[in-house]
Length: 51
Image 1 (tube, rainbow, N blue to C red):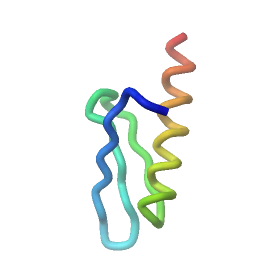
Image 2: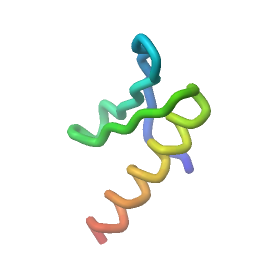
Image 3: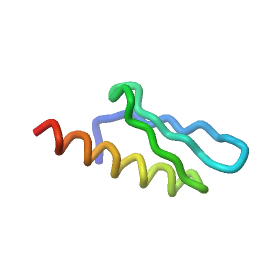
């Protein structure tokens, strides 16, 4: 997936990614990779809903 910047912030025990271009779209994961994968799913779900 391309076209949206994803920023992941590290919490105490999880990572919290978000996309500044899609306000309100957030996810989380135990690892940075899991968080990124979850965020890709959230973005795909959101953009599909916009169609």
